[in-house]
Image 1 (cartoon, rainbow, N blue to C red):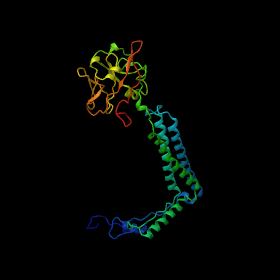
Image 2 (image 1 turned 180 degrees about the horizontal axis):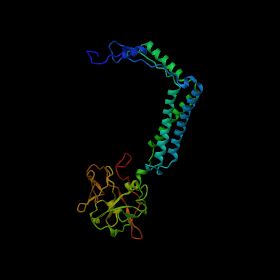
Image 3 (image 1 turned 120 degrees about the horizontal axis):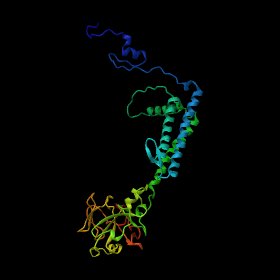
Image 4 (image 1 turned 30 degrees about the vertical axis):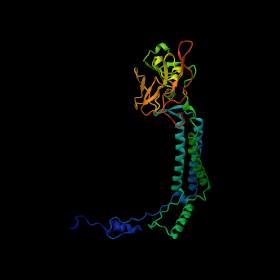
Length: 355
């Protein structure tokens, strides 16, 4: 036993410094963490068997080719698959077919480029370990020349000049992948067009009570009441119900005709029944609080207040525009109907909206 340390003596050939020196590493006296050196280089099967190298080359080319096909499929999916189509995928449930197609094809395209590059590097590129001493940040002309020489040597070791099949398919895959982003730029164009300017309301559309789902008659709306309506033909089971009701939601209030101050509002009403968009012109919250005595309606989100007896003008709050009014009348059967669509966009203001 060693009287100083209390441990058994260890053979010198087992010490880290001795192991490092034996392996060609750099050892420092009394340094227990000496550089162990590099293990002996082992050749891969592709280094000694050209047929194995050809097989690896074909695998890499196949991965790049699959990437190209997946990119083409991505573009085709974006054009062909309807945006409102849904498919069932276990265990995710029903998901959008377009999102599924875009995600799978783009994922396969990017994965195959990465997998091809990794397989190329691991099986065909030179795998000799290179040791380079650290140098100053500023490069001397000799250093830059050496870097360029190393780059040329690396290109030669990669075999990119000798393996045109890999080179061509890799360039093809890399050239097609950016097209995916170019196709997505289509949504930055004039779309959605004028869809924000229009709702489902049109001439002759009946006003349907949102609660009873029955057409409304004038006698169904007493003075001082607040009734919510939606356009005829819109059903809650419809796939696009939420999108359409977010623009077409309507509130009806019956006022005494003498209380209506705005002439156009009076002309567009029927027997004191006025129809206004339910969507606040601030951030699109539903306006739903009505005060009978003042004829004011309040948005519960940010307290924007509108005067329904004076063209729904803004009395208070951050809303920048009055609520749009819908022109209504009564058809031959005695039901309330719209005489057209809103004359201005409903909901929050946007840059194309008229002031």
